[in-house]
Amino acid sequence: TVDPILGPEMKSTGEVMGMGDTFAEAYAKAQLGAGDALPKSGKVFISVREADKPGVAAVGQKLKDLGFELLATRGTQKVLQDAGIESALVNKVKQGRPHIVDVLKNDEVSLIVNTTEGRKSIADSASIRRTAMAKKVFFTTTLAGADAVCEAIKESQGKSIEVRRLQDVHGRIGA
Image (cartoon, rainbow, N blue to C red; front, side):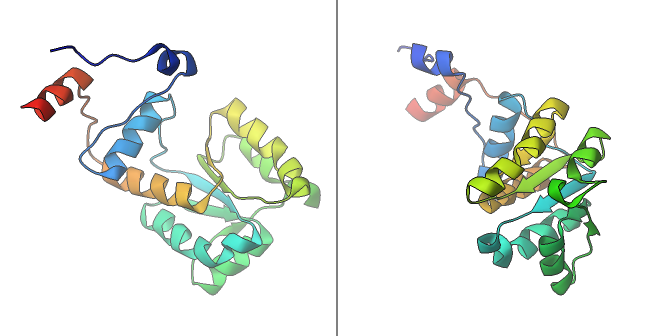
């Protein structure tokens, strides 16, 4: 039999693959393979667009249950507070200092959940994304992504990552 290999298009784009017994395990491995280790503790900055406010409390609660502290912008904090979820207020960049970029520069944030819509909001969050990349802070721009991050962190707590060679997995499938 021929061992499966990565094609040139996969190598040139830097694709990674995570395989696991659950989605959460596979997601955690894919992030690790991409060089983005998931945070295990710390503070999470949450700021979501209006359309995502109905779902932010569920993600906020999962993060709290995992032991994270929450920082939120005014509107997101109100939604979390109304759901009984504690969070600290942090200013948006345009609201004056100290603001979220200052907090990021001080290495106080380990995860960012920031959903935006519209040109102005996307442009306003550019400094957050740029600083997060420079500081290597894990960043997600959707609530679905935030939920996947929560599941992956939960799945990987207290466990070591088992790496499986693609050839071995292929051999098990063919058997």
